[in-house]
Image 1 (cartoon, rainbow, N blue to C red):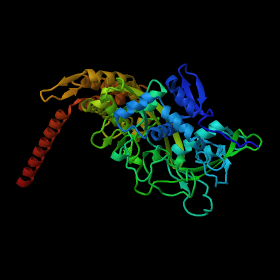
Image 2: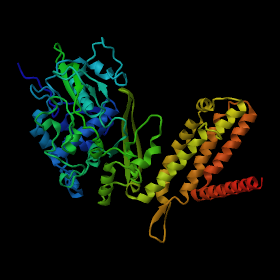
Image 3: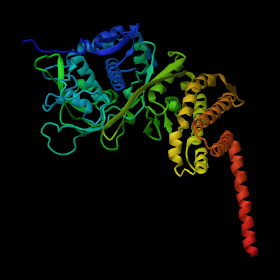
Image 4: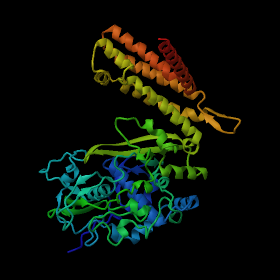
Length: 530
């Protein structure tokens, strides 16, 4: 009987979009041979797409042991994946899904399996699948390969089965670092460009992007691979981190039809030691006050755009963007950078949502600190006007509730929901701002070029118009005209206050402080006379 095999280097399993926008599946070797004629990878869902890209980048880093610097990056670009293809052909046995002793990303010691349907829903979420447990649900070997890569790269905390010969203790798999984070993927016009743009500088001797201890290998090349008793472990280096064994997994094929997978075993895998953060290895995540910037279906991506473009104060842009800036300085990159932000949110072992959002910006935002700072200021202007739609004392909705004698202004504000209208209006205006700011520049006597002398005041006016219109539309259903008039009067007062520049606001606060001091002094004198 012939030995079963499904080798990922030669079997079709990676979903891609070609230049004619047609979907097809390719093997690893086919993908790298054709990467100049492909548009992108398109997984079954955004988490799978993200995991596949990270997997391919790990292969490239291992094959080239770089890029060490910009010159090496250019050499890799010119090599056109030949070393990757050579590596895959040399290591074919490490990529066999059905290898008798070292099946790809699996642990042969596992015996307790659940249906593949249950893998999707065991975390109390039906985000991934709506199949019934008795439906006979099964997946192809190509789908199974993608599932393994996704579970190792993008998976949430969940209680799993005990590992072999374990019957007590913790068995909760941790979130992979990609969860609850906005994962940045720089996009090119073709797949080759996308992979090259995300191929982070890799120079172990300079501890870039991280320190290396021991031999930094992809997990499929290590002695234990994806098997063995789960443990806390510090990745040996960046390549090891990209292929870290966060889970222990094993596929079980149907007896009657060997080409389908109906069951899969899963337990917790390795995790980082306590107080060790993934941040030292992660290159595609922005951080604000030490925490990953998150992606939410309920928050427009552009409101965090400065986080992906600017490192300043308590925010740090993804390190892949720093590397992009260095490549740009060598004139290797085009004038526009396209970001695809992928993420999956989870809470209490439950998948809440996933999303994939794109936006583009002039590359100048990546290389010019002053320009990025001006964008941050513009976003801050929009965020500051969010208070118009809150329900605190002195807000427009609070004034409305007072006249209506509605004791719950917060519920009233939520029901009328002017804020959604406000952000929707700014969604359409923001792209214009993004491309107008770089053109609005002035170089001072100190030699520093500053941006936004005309654009930012115009943006403030746009924001105020959007806020006024959104609030006014939100209260149109209110038939108490006295209440509406009171709310609109408060609205104009708030807008006037928000129009003040920082200097004007400081002067106004100082004036109010002096006025209060004079009142206190007058009261004190009166009390003394009494």
